Every structure is written in C-alpha cells, then in structure tokens.
Length: 249
Ligand code: MN3
Image (cartoon, rainbow, N blue to C red; front, side, top):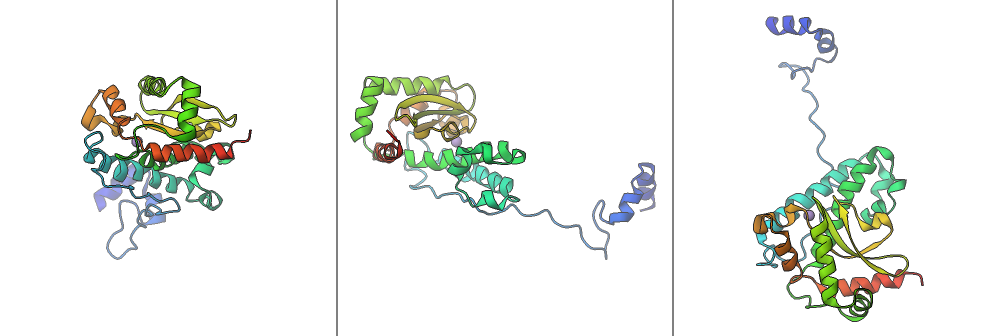
C-alpha cells in the first residue's frame, strides 16, 4: 500500500484517489465501485428467425445463419438500444421511421442510428426475403413491372447481380421503389438503408462478408447466384404490392 501510494503521489493521483476512494478497486470495508450499467434490453428487439437455421441449406448454411442472426443482427439491436438509451422520444419510434428521418435524429447519435439502426432494419427485412419455397420468380404486378423496367426477369437478375458485385467492401444491393412509382437497382455502402434516401427497399442482397464467407469465402458471385435460388418471391411480390399502394400517382 505504501509503495502504491508513493507511486500514485509521484503521478499526482493521490488527491483523486482520496476524493473518490474508488481508484483501482475498493479496499475491504469500502463501498465497491459501481458496476458498469448493463446493456439496455429495449426498446428494439431481435426478431426471431422465421424458419429453422438450416432451412436455407445448401445455399445458405446453418452456421452462417446462426452467426448472422444471433451475433451480427443482435449486435445491431444492442448497439441501437445503447445509442437511444438517453432519448426516450426516439425510443418510441420504429426503426424504419428513425432511419427514414435521420435529419431529425440528434447529431450526437445520428451516425450510430444510421449504422446500427440501418443494420437492424436491413436484417429484419433480410430474413423475410429468403425462403426455399417462395416461388421461382416474381408474381403479379412485380413480375409485370420488372419486365417493363428492366426488359425481362433475366435482365433484372443480371443487373442486380452486377450491382451486388459492384459493392466495394461491405454493403447491400437493392431493388427499390421510389416515390415516383419507379423501380430502381442500386447499391449502398455499410448498413445504409434505401429508406434514408426516400426509397422503399423491395428486395436486397446482403453482401457483407459475414453473410457468405464461411461457405463461399471470396466467391461472392457464387453466393449471389445461390441467393437467387432462395428468394421468397411470394413475400417480395406482396411487399411490392403494399409499397406500390402507398405511392402517390
Ligand atoms: Mn448482414
């Protein structure tokens, strides 16, 4: 103790130690230093995977799904909750509302909401976009509008694949609907959501390496090709119909 006090004094720290009595842990009989606050468990929550972890095999393996959902998506949710912990008004909003209106989010947490909220929103959508039994192709209005916009379903696939291959580093490729009622294909970096640009995501491909590296390593093209075999076109077509219903003509 004497030696430590001498060292502390030499460092000019004894005053601080005396004031708090907590530096370097409490001595027996003294009050223990407060434990770090536990991570908040809300208001945002991790949605359960809507199917078994191995439901998309062999195209997307169960180990990747476990890590992707239980670790990566969970981390976005936890970090988003931490970011909004001191902002009760924001905590009442939906994550889509937050990232669609980033300019209304206080600057101190805007980047955190953009990244972590974007990650939460994008992944909540991602699980729903996938299925082994969601049909082979778009249906109804989506089928018709894809043909009208991109020429054909195969030309659409080519263009979305190109966008996915063109994302440098981590990000997403998207089919989105604009307020003008037009479909568009594009990419976004990191966890940026089309919602922040005023566009509704209809279909997306997660091209972060965490989405495919265990099975496909550096072969992103193989992963993108496999992705097209597990798109839930029933859901995506319905999603498009809903989104189109909200577009003002
Ligand atoms: Mn991901």
